[in-house]
Length: 530
Image 1 (cartoon, rainbow, N blue to C red):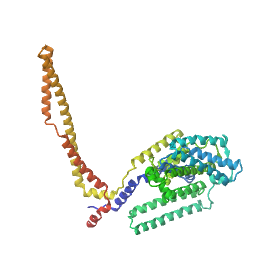
Image 2: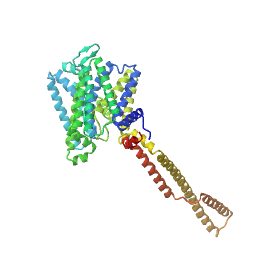
Image 3: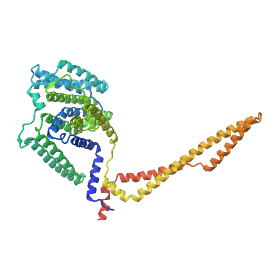
Image 4: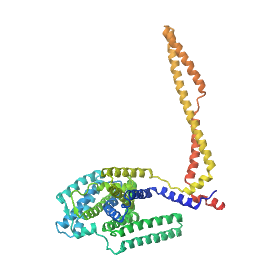
């Protein structure tokens, strides 16, 4: 057996990884393509330090909403109220601080209490009263739009407090050396070091535990890709103003939710409820409590998002809120959250939000007609859901193993394929002939029936017209009989179907053997061939 050369093996292994984990990597590939396209269209401005930093800041409030929305969708629910809820809570804090003279901490605590109460109410209606979440949150959307109007008195209220200015426009302490912010760049280098060290330690731990390790070349490729991404982000941020508080808050929220969903009992229960609510209830999980917690969580994310938004714009307005929930829902779906529940990652939802805002930002920079923007966003959302459906049951594959299996089973596969095609052609021909004979027999039966009736009538009444009809029917009868004799014996379609099914089974079995082959299956043969 011919051994795969190292370069081909590397690329086959890399493609295998992408194909096996296409649900996770698909959005990263799509985002990379978007970045490249807009970088070309804007002559590099799109990925420049200024625009890239502004892009991340503009994405911050959507990312936080998307994180909360992911858990809602994972539990098979939806929340349409978060847009105006976030805008209302932002307005509540601004009015409390600017107009009523409250301390920022007191205002935030009041908004948090409102959020918790609202989450409990929404969760109660959905979990206990069994009102569909679509209806409950749609009602909430109208209610909070009204509260927003009342709170702002339908006018724009400036947010001048130092807290809002720091959150919306502030950056970590700047220490410029040359053209770079040392703190930001240092954090980036530290993250790169952490990625390398933790990767090595994890690989050693897996080896000591006897866990199968991924190919070294693949592991190094992943590390290099992560280093490139971290370096690109940290360099761009450091070259402008550094790390903003908006970005810092977003990272903090994502880190908390990532830990909660992957490392805690609560996170596992949320996914269990989304995967199968009935089974979760039978296993002792309180589905009602989980739903209430998820809606409270969504409200807290809406509060954080609303405060970030008013801080970024330095005002609150009755015009805030529209489409926030749609951006959050779209970001979750684009990030791979399944509409059927039980599947979704908060980090991927953030990638989804960056994708949405990149499209908006890139089209604006490229001078694309703003009327086209909703069309593009809607198309991307639809494609993301279609992608999710088609990759839901994707199977793992080892293309190196497939390559070796094709070599080993080449003759067997070709023979099975040829026999399958022959059996298929014979079955099609047999069915065609069978249907033809059936139609001829039906016509002959009809002719015989009509001929018998006319001959019976001719015994009592004979006319020239009747004689002509009888002669014509006899002529047709003779023709049908000749055609039937030319067709030969009626084929036994069942026997042809049996042969076809047998050949198809053999062919599919060999195909599956090739498809499921692993490189390790051929280790002995490859050692022998050295």
